[in-house]
Image 1 (cartoon, rainbow, N blue to C red):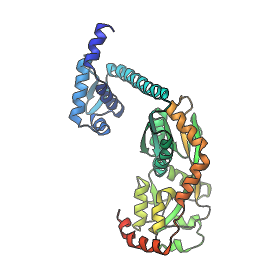
Image 2: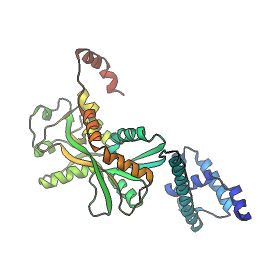
Image 3: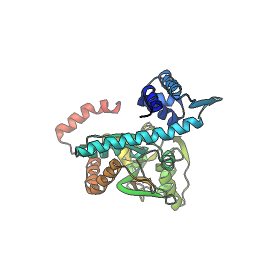
Image 4: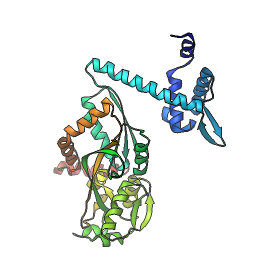
Length: 337
């Protein structure tokens, strides 16, 4: 090893490069600190040490905005390559032991957050050495992350046809019309879409896949949507409906507990539930890592098992008289969890 490189290796640490990469990707010291579980001063100190070791300024502030310097861009490119090689080395070493290992980074749209942990649990039973990370985003953010190749895989519905993406549908995503318990609409056997939309409607924000699916459905039936309120997550919409603020369309998987407890009730709107699919998505030009390929293969091979598993989750529990008694005793507790 040349002496100059030896000197650099003695002054550099992988931790410094990891902190640098987080600041570079998050475009800020505060966000990087949050991501790494460090304090902001600790992140600043690591960057100062790295700049001193390299004798280069890597970041600079213009006004209040943080920018990466030309030297920083070079370090970012090489650091990314270095960590990719380290991951590959880890995978190769585990492969020698006949065990698949490495990182699996998934971005999931918020409607899929109820599904992905169950899916990963089934997968990780087979591959316990894999480390998985899930980032929950809205549809617009998912599309941006696909464009920037931020993740190994994205899980979303309504995959745009005009973009060069590889997509594997793997599970039915039912969007159901709901109202608070005891709402007049819940007493009717059939409700037209027009009648449903005349009630105060709670909608997700623009860019949400759930909202887009409802907008497309209404457009096809020449119905217009007017929201009494827009909310930033399905959980926020769910709680607003339970509070009696209006009606909504939500993914069934996200409200199973509330439907079972009778806190929300399904409305029998014509042509509902809306059926979409959750899909595994990645850019066509991307070469999936061995870990990503294993996950894709697992999902393809287990499509029937996955569908059955989630169908059983969605079934209301069979209650014996004793179970009803237990349920009654604990229902108040659940309501406030």
